[in-house]
Length: 172
Image (tube, rainbow, N blue to C red):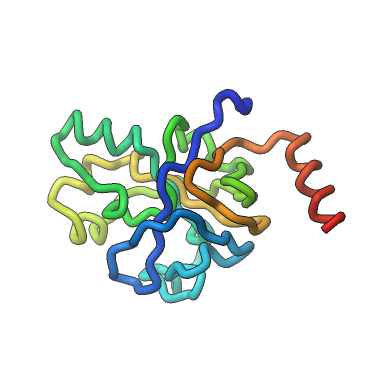
């Protein structure tokens, strides 16, 4: 994926409490190995925090997937109601499974698709479980922390950008 194909951050959502509705912020610190500052998963208090496995540090969902489901099924899920942290535009998140990518200044690793579950359907509306199969986003880990802000690029890592970041880190 080249920079011309990079997506962007359209919104950012966090919540400190496990079952509370996430609220929008304009920027957030991504904490390596933990999650987004102020979010339930960074503090270990998320609904699934006690379950083993990666991919709970940051979650992403594509506006295009929310729009496609609304068009095809009539189910309109507000971005915050998706319970994902980062709303993207212009990028197929499925292409980032197993890959390293930048969200703003944070380096992340796509772990797996974030499939819908009965909990999401319970928190939103009937039909969400089936409508969002393979469209409910991406689960990722944060490898190198950094700020994420609305408007930032989301792009797959290339060797040059990773070397540039490492050089900046060494000189800081």
